[in-house]
Length: 141
Length: 141
Length: 141
Length: 141
Image 1 (tube, one colour):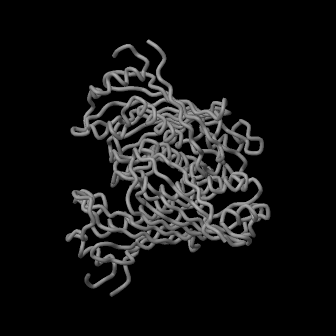
Image 2: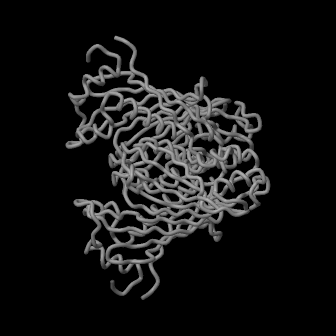
Image 3: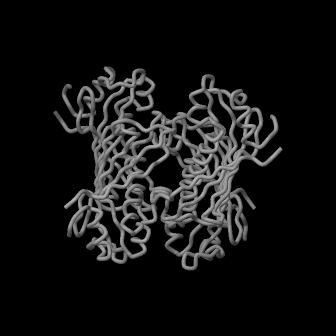
């Protein structure tokens, strides 16, 4: 077992993302996390848009975020993401948001696989087993 | 021909809707307009959620908004809406946003009917013809 | 010590809040939480807008949400909030989102007081001590 | 007089930006427009964050958008912007959104300069006169 694959996206703070406190509204970090894990999934060879078309949803069951310092308009922040935990029916992503070397926030999201046809939880699509195992830095699942 | 039906919703400004200028971000007004026309459609007896389930989308083809004064966190604003123009294949809603008597913004959105099955423009669903004609304050269409 | 004061707001799901999964995007729950705690603070006699004008920010340091079932367009959901934990320098709110009796989500947010003039953490404004202690259902702090 | 400077940004559609119609919600285009004009201003040598720090706001007084075809999750769209009209007290930006060669939307936003100290309309900051005249493709203003 090795380290999970780590992907980083650069996000330019949008004016609309700030609030009257002068920093990015805390709810926006969940949107950035999502954009980061889109990129991470994409590196596995499967864009999440494609996964949905295959008939599966990766439904968020829990999200958690710790906020250290606020991102501001004008910043370009780096959002790191990795597949922290992988099981046959669910998974957890980890995230970090940085401005240069300064940590701004960190968090996790937990998900389960849902079969779009039935709307019910299901096992990970077979075709993703190998690429996601690799993302997670695991030998096998 | 009489006046179109006018509906008003009260919207409490959300902190997340403000930006670092200390007022509500201009893009939010389009969201408020949408909430207002949801209520307006609802008064016709057809919630827009129901219209979609019937197989139709009311796709936005144009939106316009003029901003006079900014809404701020702590405000409860009134959003008026009315069916300004009704045609067999499209329609236009009008909107006004007020804080008490003070006009904050006004705007319009234009829409066409789309058949969800084909993804193509279509005529207004027959079942909406009478209630929407009434909404528009018209004798007949 | 008694139970904390519980406030409930009704929130009409906005079309813009849905995503292509057909349910409300998970980040939106944090916005609803915020609207709920605005109402809760308001019942203490201090709208959060007023607290900011007094020179204080209640900065979010952590947010957590568990998602059970998705809210959909057409729903009016109830968002409960309460002051779960009160300390001199920080506090934690609890939240529940329901559609009738069905639990959709629950969560918490943690906050610290920040002096707007210095941008540094500070103690709870003296004037809020009594009303917030009451909100929390405590005898004294 | 020559053509105005045209800047293009690439925007990766975020899942949170879609709605239950399966396309990007129309209000999001205003946010993209804003990100595009941030980049355009930046090419003049003045990031809008800096302009605000200089004591000025570029307040939106009108926004208009025409929607041709919907952007979808998985798309990377190009957002073009240019300074369409420049006057001493206000200006208008033009925008186009494309997916490759396919036009998705176009729009304009109109703005006035506001002095942050007084909250009142004012003339364009002197220091921006030359760079913005150049952006607009004008000889002089």
